[in-house]
Image 1 (cartoon, rainbow, N blue to C red):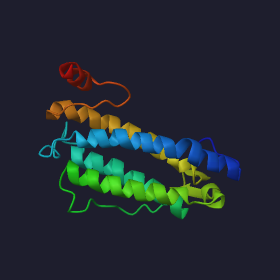
Image 2 (cartoon, rainbow, N blue to C red):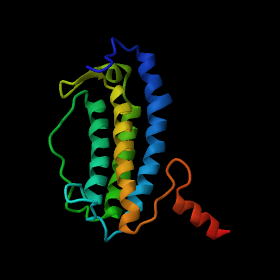
Image 3 (cartoon, rainbow, N blue to C red):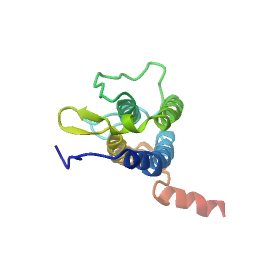
Image 4 (tube, helix red, strand yellow):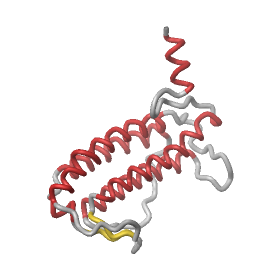
Length: 179
């Protein structure tokens, strides 16, 4: 195990959920939405290399993994069964709609968790055994990492890169043109 937590007090878990993870998740969700929204509807099959995922596959990976991690916190265990993209998700707009509704529903459920549920030790593939709330932090790192990959797809596919942590070249150009 990496940096195992010996124990976590209920008030620590509540602070992590309400004071740190939920606000960060909501903030990062908006930035992930911007990147997915920037994928042109007809370019979801773009990939920078034959061994890379397509833009839509990578966007699906980001969003479905967020739901998987939130589900693990909610249920107290990881379900690692494959989660295929529904056939109804054919482009970035379809994915964005799915992601928005699923994210909001999951966040509402997370708000209802008890301290016992948040501090329950959850096993992730036998690699990490940590309090459930810990996995929301891991979710953030995972999403940010893959969102960075996806943002690198945008310009080569002919799309504009949105502002993520400050202005991008494209958002600065749009601002200057609007003046």
